[in-house]
Amino acid sequence: MNQKIQSLSGYLHEYQKSIHQPEKFWSRIASSFYWRKSWDRVLSWDFKGPDVKWFENAKLNITENIFEKHLFTHGDKTAIIWEPNDPNEEAIHLSYRQLFEKTCQFSNALEAEGVKKGDRVIIYMPMIPEAAIAMLACARTGAVHSVVFAGFSSSALADRIEDCQAKMVLTSDGNFRGAKNISVKAVVDEALEKTTCVETVIVCQRTKAEVQMKTGRDLWWHDVIKGQPVEHQAVTTDSEDLLFILYTSGSTGKPKGVVHTTGGYMVYSQYSFLNVFQYDQDDVYWCTADIGWITGHSYIIYGPLLSGATTLMFEGVPTYPHVGRFWEIVDKYKVNQFYTAPTAIRALQAHGLEPLEPYKLDSLKVIGSVGEPINEEAWHWYHDHIGKGNCPLVDTWWQTETGGIMISPLAGITPNKPAHASLPLPGIQPIIVDAEGNELKGNNVEGNLCIKFPWPSMIRTTYGDHQRCKDTYFSTYPGMYFTGDGVKRDHDGYLRILGRVDDVMNVSGHRMGTAEVENAINEHPKVIESAVVGFPHDIKGQGIYAYVICDMEGRTESGLIDEIKDTVRKIIGPIAKPDQVQIVSGLPKTRSGKIMRRILRKVASNDFSNLGDTSTLLNPEVVEEIIKGAKIQ
Ligand code: PRX
Image (cartoon, rainbow, N blue to C red):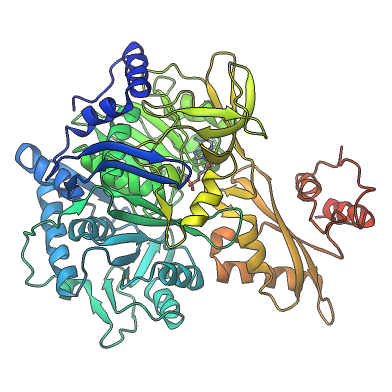
């Protein structure tokens, strides 16, 4: 734990070292890990390719840095506390030794079923301990996991299975979420009808729901682990071997598989966890994300477990069986660091202070926020009523592609400024540019956020399509990684993230491409064309607003609207269902046929002022019609 920064001057000192001698800096941080063979070179890079390698030719297994490294000193320490959806069901505490044994056992089972280094394994599971074991066992055997959020539909799952040509799917019978008992295996069955690459499905029993088991393909988790030894020789991987693929939405086309490799991700997820949250050895840490997202990967599983931390995994939802459930769990386990999304805060804030009354919340030392800009009102409510005014609030900015937290206060070290992600972590070199890519130096500037130097956990490629990685992140401003976010550096030099500047929405902290939702809407047989934009939403941050041109023959508007919403739910999943659908006769277009989204965004936000000069449009008359239609929504 000698990598922990202790003070503001310590941070400033480390930051300077990290940018003046990055290789020396990261070599020192990395040397506290266990490598089977050390690296020949710390970093080689070029952002044109892009081609980035960290800890070149080093050999390791990331799970040896979770288990073998910690077993002698704290084998009996709790690694994972699992809190079930139903508070009356018994929680599970797994020590590092128990988690190790279960991981080994399942690693042996994976190998017995033919999984080899480099094979892709899809994990489509609820928040149960086996999901963590599945990820760790993949890493131990050198297989590449790709976790798909269990709320995604069968076609979204099929797309991901097909894209990475997965050999195996790990899943469960069902999923308890709040009052719902959701089928999971049935979704996998449907997805597998559309794909041909999967040879084996392993099903973990959770809800005891009846499921179809296909002979020769489907196996029960409890059967495959039977008789498997609780020891396993970890497979040696290269620092740049793939650790996982995680699909995320962009402004164009289908979601892309963001590729993370082993050595750099290991170093950065651990280093950032320890420093941002200032984790102490006896602390209980809780991140409420789902393992289907990058936050679950880096800050429920890898970062905390690599640090020897106790990490809490919660199966349920914040409002079940009551709206005080989060706070009940905080008190029950005396949680010290609590990390959640602004959307959850705003949803709980809407219930007022009464649900907080039964709880002390006095164990909390640090509270954190992730996934979307946190508005000042939510920031203050979280700080004052959950943190009781004396917990540092870490507003952490990062992305699936960055692998780890990039800009954030370090808890208790960086002075807190509401709604500001504040300062970059050591090793991170943000730069603000204008539309032409010119650097905006100094304070009081606003522009696009780029990163000008590599960091260990950065995206290496988009799976199967390197050109897409280059086009999306490294071409807008040559020589820099472009984040897609707008940012402001204020008069103190603190950074405030302003949100996406591209066609990506952020709905309840989930990233959603407008094109992806449009493609789903267009699948409805009566839809001719659609345009989707985000609009400000009190709880979700952004809601989804769809303008749709339909063939109305023989149809009612309300019937069609419901069907369109349902089509999106089926094709992507409930998180992508539009909040508003407006049937229109045309979309405002420029003379070259481009949809004027600026106008659509304004109308969706109930802002009808300054629509700009619409006379140059191909069809200015539709603007009036759209405004009229929107006002009656
Ligand atoms: O727009 C930023 C927003 O979420 C995007 C990344 O989404 P995703 O890859 O799904 O990862 C979310 C969890 C790391 C960013 O481009 N975002 C994330 N954190 C913040 C944020 N916006 C403002 N403040 C944050 N703290």
